[in-house]
Amino acid sequence: MQSNFNVSIFPSRDEMGTAAGKCAERMFVNAIKQKKGGIVRAIFAAAPSQNEILAFLAKSKKIDWSKVEAFHMDEYVGLPADAPQGFGNFLDAHIFLKVPFAKVHYLRPSGNPEKNIKAYAAELKKAPIDICLMGIGENGHIAFNDPGVADFHDGETVKIVELDNTCRNQQVHDGCFKQLSDVPKQAVTLTIPILFKSEHIVCTVPASAKAKAVKATILGPCSEKCPASILRLHPDANMFLDAESGKHVSEFL
Image 1 (cartoon, rainbow, N blue to C red):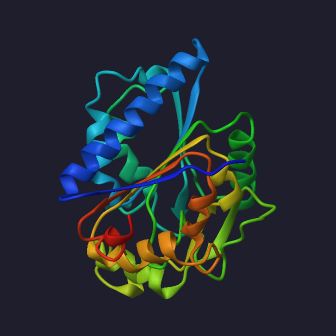
Image 2 (image 1 turned 135 degrees about the vertical axis):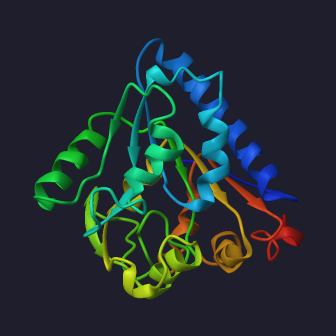
């Protein structure tokens, strides 16, 4: 399998989001054409880093969303069902309830977590994933696969993980929670192999807080110590940066 890892840096966050949105829009349009009436399956990340790309896609007039089935890649354990920090709720507000998807699959760890996780994993494995929209964390995580938890050869599709403090502090930095003690200590996440199997990946990473993780992803070893580094091996991964997130790598690109 030949890798095709493309990195682009833009002067502003808005320009980054527009470029990432246009890239994802082309992917959706092309995938829908290739399916010839079938359903395109896509995974969405929920984070402030995704605000611009989701805003672009929610306004797109080119995508027939009735041909798209949506998943999201992670969710906190222990939050109230209506908590705005919940990733399903975030995506409802930014795109899931703004366009007419064929179907949206919600990752619900409450009630019977093991049963719900198995059901979600079964849905994911019914057919290949065409498109994955993601970011990376300050610690280089993708979804909630933090260093120390990330496994490039994970045998699970969806699992419960303990969040490390860098990851939890990021949620405070992003303005999602007021203080560290408010951030859940556990989450449910799609594992790295299922994310990596997506045919196309659009990874949108703004802000200076991500600059070190971006450098490790692009220039460091391909290692589970920086889970996002696996994107370098993907056959079609596209990373979009702004000037702040790309400040440590711009001279090498």
